[in-house]
Each structure stands twice: as structure tokens, then as C-alpha cells.
Image (cartoon, rainbow, N blue to C red; front, side, top):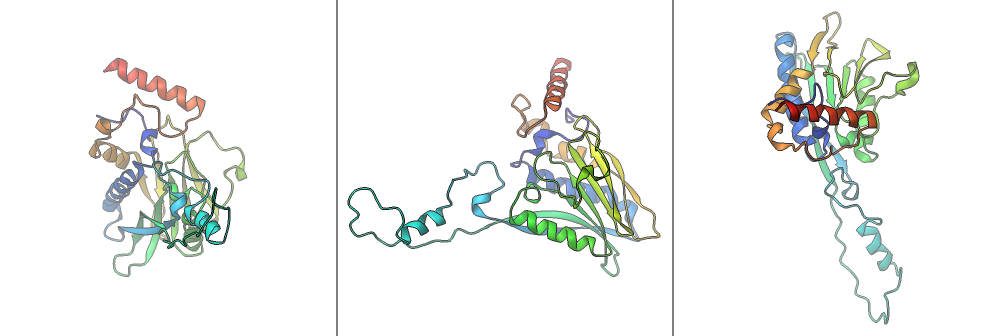
Length: 269
């Protein structure tokens, strides 16, 4: 059964589901492009490792505390707040440092098969790229590195929540159209412009141009096709309970549209 929505499904933005959605989308997007790239180019899948501090987890089932454990212990070791009642002899704790959390995020790189030279990097953003912290800082450093190189960059943002990653405000060229999702294309031949594709929740995911190395022409990618494969092969029609509220925040307009869309789906079943 297909998704009840014409484009992106907000229930799949759930951070608990996103790693599986992300992996499938990257794989199917590579498969979508490969026939049009060969034999001159090849699309490969790489992986970036981001570090998220244990007390800044991006996953929703981790409870945040006001004061990290290590800091609380340090107060007492340094003779901080006294114990209630008779202090007596206070034992010194053995400190265990909690490890940082590694988050592995796949991406696509279009390369020349013979030389391995990178031509275009395609990033599908994850919550760690859009959340304040070391992981986002790492991503923005990598973004800046790519933009200083001779490679093209394509950023696909299918997450309505979080901070944007574009290096310039979206309203720099005037008021942008209403949107929930964004695709940005950064051409190596024109670093002064970003080709931006704003996408509303009620829209089909777009067909857009992916640049290669000049003078070779762009290829056109239909983002809806890999998303549909992701939804079908991931059996999200069975896994997602649309009777529950959306796991991410929606605007009032989006919420009204979603409710009407789901009600129509139930009525036609």
C-alpha cells in the first residue's frame, strides 16, 4: 500500500525511524542515478561518523537531565554540596567517563571510475546535522570543505524540524515560498548562487538537476521514485499507525491538511 501522502511522509521524520529511512533512501537514490551516470561516472555510497555527546542524544527515548552525571559527581569530589545529616567519612568515587555516541550517516559521491576523483557529493540530512552540537559543527566544516573544492554539492533536507544548514539565510533573495523541506544545489562553477527547491508537505517530491563535471550535462533525478521504493520495501504501511499523532511538529495548516488527507483515506478504504 502506498503512502497516504503525495510526497514526503511526516511520520517517517520520526528520529527513531529515520536511520532506516535514511539508509534506504540513499541506496535507492544511488540506484536511481546509476544507469544515467555510467559509464563516464559512478555513484558510490560513503559514510560519515559524527560524535554526539552522551547527554545530547538526538534520539527521543533518552531522558535529558538538568545536570550531566559527570558534573554532579565532580561537585561532590571537589567538596561541593554537603550530605544531609551527619557527613562522617565520605568515600571517594571511582569516576567512569561515559563514551560519546557515534552516529553513522551515509552519503552519495559521484566519482570518475578510473581516477576516483569526486565530482558531486549528495548529502541527505539527518537530525544530528540540524541539532546544535559537535555533530552539526562537524557537518558544517565538511560542507565548507566541499564548497572550497572543485566538487558540486547537493543537500536534501526532508526533516521539517531543526536548524537549516545553508550558509546564507533562505530569505536573502526575498521571501521564500511556503515549504517544509528543502533541496539545495551548489555548483562548483558558480559558488555565488544556490539553486533552492522549496517543497511543501502537500507536494510530490521534485525532479531536479544534479550537476556533473563541466561540460557534461546535468542528470535529472526524480526524488519521489526512491522515496516510494523506501516506503514500499520498508513496509511502512504496516509499521506506521496513522491513528497516532504525527511524531514531529506540524504547522496548523499542515495539521489540518494531514487530518483531511487521512480522513479521506479511511473513508475510501
